[in-house]
Image 1: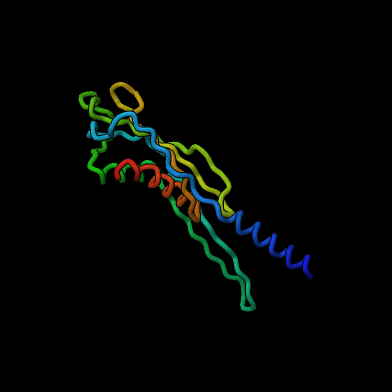
Image 2: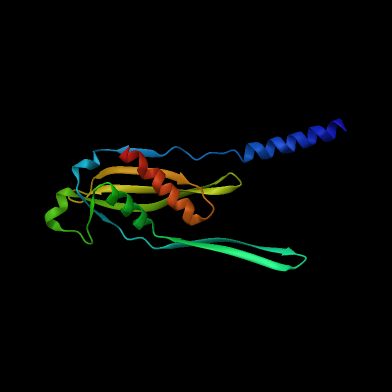
Length: 163
């Protein structure tokens, strides 16, 4: 009986420690302030669709449900920048290059976390005139779907820039 209780305790402790991971702190490498710029052009990204679902059976039949979410990372980034007062350009304007940021987005990693996984994203800001790096932001996100993971990661990456 003593060994049985010890075994149950060890299994419970292991599950508890495995499920208690946390997201990495966002990393910001800022070479110059974003306030020097007024406009931005964001590289187009494709939409991501993800979903969750399940099927449940009972004595009265089988039931199921699903949820689908679609996001476009460039729209989330653009929304944050617009909220901060930047002006989005539909195409690069040579007369405004000195005041324009080029914004690039990419998924830069994935790791197991909390009995699931997190997605890491990196957002890069370049000076349109010189193509030098103004700022790079990296953060992780974890939600119920991949779309949630990316939305959370983008928001976590950009929020320290505007605090």
